[in-house]
Image (cartoon, rainbow, N blue to C red):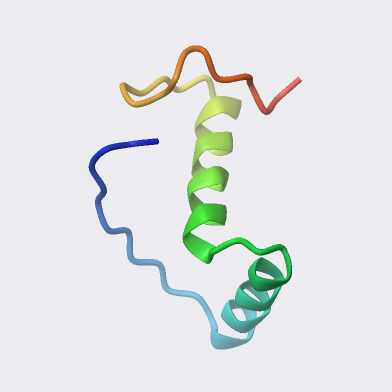
Length: 62
C-alpha cells in the first residue's frame, strides 16, 4: 500500500452516492478502498505504470 496519500474530491449526485455507499457497506469495504481499486484497475487497463505499484502483485486483469 502507498505510504503517502493525496485527497481527490469527486462530485457525484446524492442518489448515486447513497447507492455506492450502501453497496460498499454490504461488501464490507469503504468507498475509499473501492475508488482506489477502480483507479488501479483503470491505470492498469491503459498500461500506465506508477512508482508505488508493486511489481510482484498479481494483475487483476487477464
